[in-house]
Amino acid sequence: MPTMLTDVFRGHPIHLPHSHQPDFTSLSELPDSYTWTPKDDPLLDAAPSPPAASENIPLIDLNHPDAANQIGSACRTWGAFQIANHGVPLELLQGIEFLTGSLFQLPVQRKLKAARSETGFSGYGVARISSFFNKQMWSEGFTITGSPLNDFRKLWPQHHLNNYCDIVEEYEEQMQKLASKLMWLSLTSLGVSEEDIKWASANPDLNWAQSALQLNHYPVCPEPDRAMGLAAHTDSTLLTILHQNNTAGLQVFRDDLGWVTVPPVPGSLVVNVGDLFHILSNGLFKSVLHRARVNQTRSRLSVAFLWGPQSDIKISPVPKLVSPVGSPLYRSVTWTEYLRTKATHFNEALSMIKNDIDE
Ligand SMILES: C=C1C[C@]23C[C@H]1CC[C@H]2[C@@]12CCC[C@@](C)(C(=O)O1)[C@H]2[C@@H]3C(=O)O
Ligand SMILES: O=C(O)CCC(=O)C(=O)O
Ligand SMILES: [Fe+2]
Image (tube, rainbow, N blue to C red; front, side, top):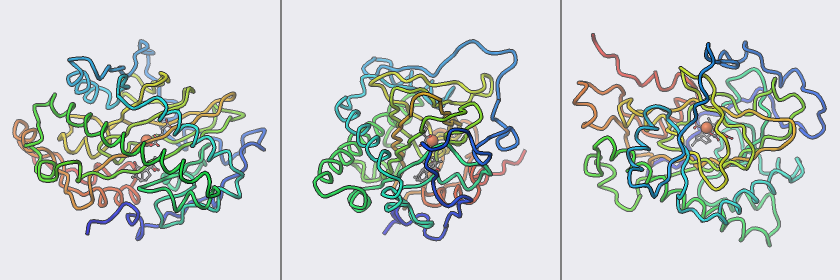
């Protein structure tokens, strides 16, 4: 039996520096423990000099005949793009956003009933990566994998449960289909097809994939310029599909441009290349460094669909993409192994599985 995501962190408890969430609404100024300086994050104010032209991640129409190449090019230059005409019903996006809003509006005491345990995977809490920073992030999260029923039971009375569980399950299903479509479109642009990837062709019907949902809430913040919603990170996924409410906050990093804000485009979805897709593409696709900022007037919600392979699947650079360069840039790794490496080494995880290439 492959390890399920639920068991991934069993042997890797996170010891968070701060044990529980404050009541954000009661804070009128930013406490020191929430005030970030460049000492807490070297890339905090990273900006190009001279300031670059206002460039942004592309918005790609999935119905466009050239969508595959546009996606491929976005994966190489940005590691991120937005998509329109993705086929996910608008009501479903509205449904998951409504659910997310209702969840975070619950009283703190109720949310804490569904708190994620130190070794657990799902439930309410601060982002896992919080343990790597000295300062606290201005956000709260809720992680789900598979059926949310057990966790939702702790939050809501019976009569809400069916509806909320249906929304989550329908959302997971739609995202799963979309993610696989996006993966094959981007690989097509590299001349790679399903036959070139053994584990995919051997496990038809997406039996090789698994996923998690991360609901994020960034409350209104009294001093947004000195706070951090979610610190800079790359996702440990193949792909991540993100729905954000109509409030800006997500930023992606480009070496030549610094931090670039991804404007919300109603109805569209943001796609990030994760570390596993970077490995699979032998470094051709860039796993994008991103973060979330906060603001003073509007609370922000986001829903991230984190998508990867079943845990018995070894991800390694596609042979077709290795031969032109000579050797694979990375060793093979399962999603479980990678998540555990990330849980201990955070942003160094990718370099830890890099092959030493002899000159
Ligand atoms: C399947 C995943 C991917 C995780 C860990 C686990 C469950 C929650 C995901 C996130 C979501 C928030 C950012 C991140 C960096 C975090 O702290 O938790 C993500 C992390 C990763 O992509 O590494
Ligand atoms: O809230 C956002 O825009 C980013 C969320 C994110 O990066 C994540 O959940 O991994
Ligand atoms: Fe992320």
